[in-house]
Length: 367
Image 1 (spheres, rainbow, N blue to C red):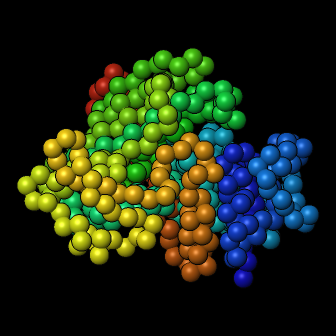
Image 2: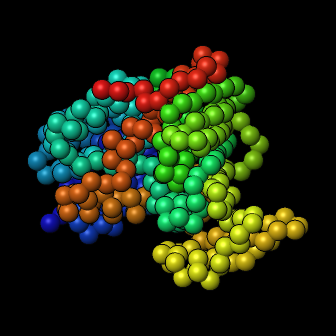
Image 3: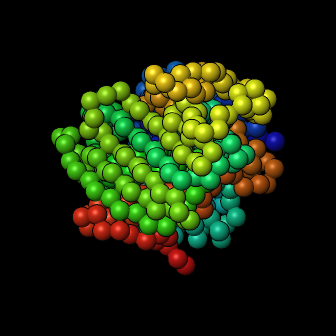
């Protein structure tokens, strides 16, 4: 069995989808949809992608919806098109790989949810950093009890994006990009949810604008109240003069993770036991100093979440998981229902910032 794939929106992220589907033995690319066939071919050539001569290239999204040999539609168009195309794909009975953000407002999130529920198709949303080894280890470290009860969690998405980005013309606009959280920082929001295992009940936020060219504020700072007693913090920005940085911190009542360092206070962690328990061969653990007077454990892996280049991101693991979920008739951990909670937190934070920091209660969608 090989699942036929149609890809709409042939840009930077779509090239990674195409490569990953090509490498998966249970899928094959059937058709590509872009605004201009010549531009599609130039994008493929620039990214070193050779396609089978039988692969169809179309400028009509409706051709993907109607094609009986397409089982999966990968949606990688500008942000404001995602929801409408996802709803149409679900109604056509196609499984959906959906780039973030899933929707630009609560009404779009509800439309996606209802269409997917009614159709029963499988979905996955490209918060692909959940497949990065460091974040997988953080999630496991917390879920398996090494961290203890979470007291505080922080995530940051800091990326200096200007007109070098191929999607600059649409991403910088309110219509196309929406906000920094919707366009980029939602990756940090999703990592915060997944690594901490907690859902937000209230947010308050402030935003500001430094970088020219954007129609929306270019930095947002978000305070989060989680279920229970824990609190958290998110920063999403394109304003800072520094390399791309994606960071996650988890602080529990037994231990703390600050990016690549595991720390403690009164009760040192047993490195040998932690090494024996670690289920990830890509992760190694080493004694390391923290500051000038404390000991810690450094987490090392070859592939860190430290590059804005999507070629560095774990799309292959994401798409392999998605294809397997379709074949095995199971849900993915990143379906549109789970992603809706990430998107609601982003929308609530943007709303709070627009209101001058007034708190907004979650969930936004209650029916």
